[in-house]
Image (cartoon, rainbow, N blue to C red; front, side, top):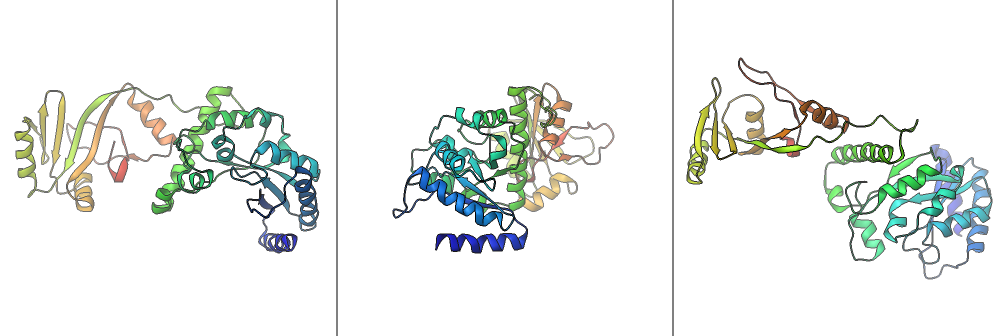
Length: 329
């Protein structure tokens, strides 16, 4: 029955033009163990897949009943000895169990059919729920994803790398925003890999180095005219003083020591549109950095969007990118 179900999936895949069927290690209490048994089943499945011009990728789940280690999964694939059967590597399953990564380096690259990347915060919980609810993009968690990538790089693998992320917060967010964050995480991950392993022909050019932040220069609030007097009275009560008025705009500057608060009640431009969309709130944060041009370039390379609007007489052109919630940095 298992092979019949697999064949139905293979037929559907072949009809859709897909060529890789993923098979995960069994978690059923009724499943049979043994590497040789798994290898024999994989060989038979490989025979049936090859007839349909498909391949089979075998993956060890961290909570697998008999096989939960990529090394055992690789041994089953090796013993299956079929060109249509290969290994699927998932960083979460290997790193969550703190599995030694050295063995990855000795796996022939053509026997790795797919690599799935995921990070996660360190949590003391069962592997299944940890995996299904708390995965994050590479660089967002606590797992040593970089070490996994370095081991993979040693094989010369140049095939597909995917992001397999299960996360309740991501599910509730914007699909487009999550996709961009995922793309950004891959760019960052490859840059980190390049930094640790040196120049590689299949890796992108390095990102500009992080520019050291020297402090917060100002915080800008977008506020309507009716709310502004109460807000400015609050600032005065907190010890701020009105230190300046923009030469041509309804923008005031309030200071206390080295703190600068900008109150923007303009009726056109970015702050006005931000106020219409979000109501009164922080529309921009100004950061003082060592190299503004390099900081802007790095942000753009990491898929942030630069922002600009008309600059009036006597105004500065301040480099900016989009921040959280459509605000500016």
